[in-house]
Image (tube, rainbow, N blue to C red; front, side):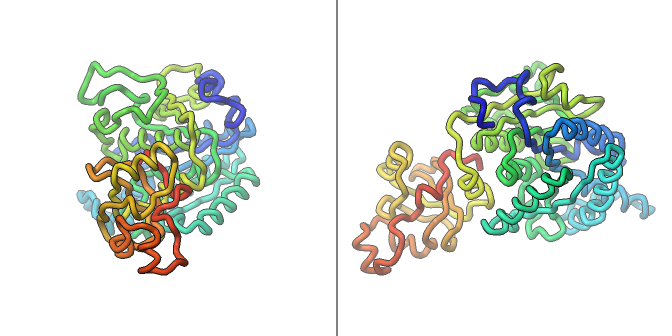
Length: 390
């Protein structure tokens, strides 16, 4: 959103300045206890078609495959008392449900003369920068053709139960993938409250969050929806990541006869607008920080912490006090103080065993061990994101 400053963004002018939007819809919106709600699919397709007809490019990140698969299993099996919550069952249900979910979407969007495209992603598939850029090129071509990309995690081949953690995280990753101007998170709740409204009847809604980095979202969010895997915590964490990228987030209810266009135009009540940060990060740093889970930690002294936070310097081996975990070169790692305060994440130029030999040493001492043809930095500032929302 290059033509606007942070203070210019409000609900009344949000829609007119958006050309590309990522919409994430959760299982709690799309499903009933019996499975996928066809009325919810139809309602969502109608709303997105309106945006598309206004020359807006839309990427839809959709949950619901597992629920659709469970529904199909129950239709075919006499005894459907099992919850099927183990990893293999969830992945098998997703494999069954993906086709059914896409069929429902394809039929619903076809009624509005809109083509859909299924895009299945894994975090490991986006880990390599070349594959990330290839996925970006594919998405660009789909949007150029006027198709509606429908994105979900490729659960069937994921080696962990939830590689992205939830589709809120996947939605935030798609912002950097397609260069979106806005993130809309459709949920079962009517926006964000100062406390969990399920356990606090006097909780108050928050119409606008101006500085999400200063919020203690863990203390605010102590509940999850029953159907999905995220809850409001994951939605706010995704919003904070979007804010770092310079993208505003609208968290709004997708239940009932919702009007997405009215929500974007600010002509209906409800929902929460999360403003972007004043100082944003590049798409490459965003990808680097969030494409994978950190697999270790580098603990640094006060002088190194000051150099990173105040002077924007790279992390040198002499400022490293300790190494935690076992990792290879180019792994994503936490950068922490000796007291355990998390400063950020970065891509390590060296393995954990190499850093064990380097820590606390000057460059000339390191060259005696490893030779002169190695990087001076343990983590270069261009490969580092401080205050990351992990």
